[in-house]
Image 1 (cartoon, rainbow, N blue to C red):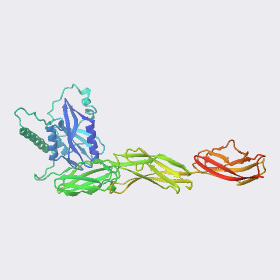
Image 2 (cartoon, rainbow, N blue to C red; image 1 turned 90 degrees about the horizontal axis):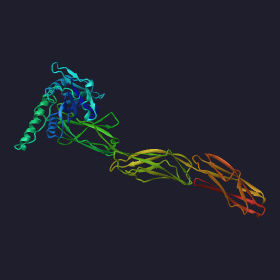
Image 3 (cartoon, rainbow, N blue to C red; image 1 turned 60 degrees about the vertical axis):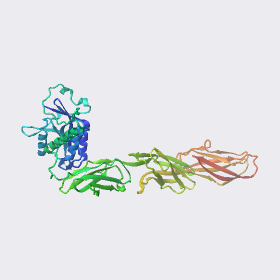
Length: 514
């Protein structure tokens, strides 16, 4: 009996790569043998050729892996290999069995890891050296460990080690006093050739004419972009590619758009993704085909696209006529967006002014303030207000984001009747005062009277001189002006003033005393 322990980050990375790719993926497993447990602590791959039901590590990739192992840039020993299946589940095909049998010539515990790209499930296999049948390692013999110290479960520590052929490990001896740099280079070259040659025998590469240049894609992924700005993609393709295609899509979409990349130099291809397509986070991959039908494909890359967002914190902003009000606008900057954004508003009625501060807003401003003022001519009522934030790339079309809020213009109206009263001195004159409030006006209204003749007094029929208006509608008061007996006959101008919420209205009526 033998066991497999795999470090969770290695397993998760392989599973994610298989699910992000349209075709199969392939690579090598690195680690060590600890008693009867094959410990997988790393994985390595490179540019590979892929199709729906197959994947190939070309000679150049294997040579690069060997060089990295020899130089110490990559740590560990080769303990197995992995590949994915796009359909059919977890198993070893006839080709996989032959590959695994040849790998087990190096170690009887070399492991084949298979990933179901649809479900993300994994299986670990070896081949019976006598019957040639595949053997799936039982789930209870597999450990996915988080900490390195947990790679070997306690119940398996101290068991008698199984005897197995050693894993494939490449090391260089430290040069002694008689060594030379040229000798070390020869040793390194020989080791690379041995590894590549052995992998050829293992079936990791396609058979091709000796003179053929392998098809391979060399590409540095685009790390970032800005909304509304073109993205230039460059790729080098060896192997006399007959076509090189870019497949791109918004990150949230499952449907890729395919375009042909243009040749700009020998083995170099380019495509500029138009600014109008850069509207959100993007994903893409590149594939190439040569005249023999061989294919190569990159993994799926993600481009974070810098963008901006904002929203109004107030659903309805009420503004009194002859007054003003303000509301915060919350700002958000996505993926390092650091460009200025200019704000404007539309939909306000005549007599209403809308402004923003600061304007434009820049990265680092968590919010801006929208200020609205209305003069006496502004019509009362509710109006939909559209707030627009605009970023204009250099030489590009403006990028506009919008949000909406409701603008409510409110006021109250004062009416006094009749406009003139005639009384004999010592008598009282009565007037009717009506306050009509429109929707949204919620402040108390204070009524005062000015211009009364000497010695005259006034009173409202309600207690005190304050009228608290609790909503839209009309409230009526009776104003009673009492004249003294000593008052001289004549005509007097009496002014009724109503004030509330910073808004003031007044009317003047006549008081005629006989």
